Image (cartoon, rainbow, N blue to C red; front, side, top):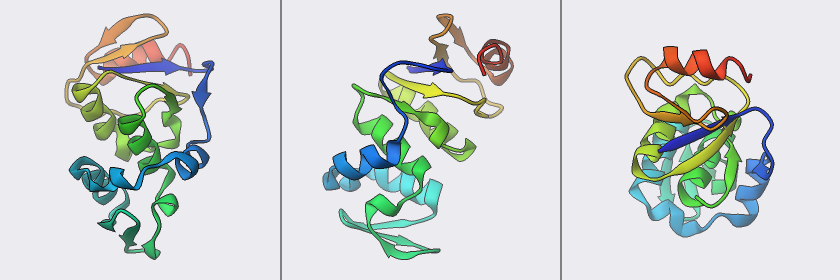
Length: 145
């Protein structure tokens, strides 16, 4: 399940780009889900575990990906840490929900992310409530951001 804590939280990794730079594993880019994240969020193609073809920047290293996709990859691959998902735009929301369906992850948000019109299941750690749509989420999260 995707667990979200809104607002200040201890032991959160806020600078996800730096954390990614020093901790990513090139093997992560062999994972079809990571390849799909990079394609969906950054419109870029993984050429191998050390090269990404960006339509804007040309061939880049994984550390040059957007902050949003790097944060998503960290959330997916390093589940024992809590990352600041406010580094992600709304274009990452569907991926956060998908990761949360596959494994139990906790993220910190400092803004109201739009998770779309479909039903979903997210636990708000500030209150312990499980919400199922944006209306429910806004009524709880709005108190904290």
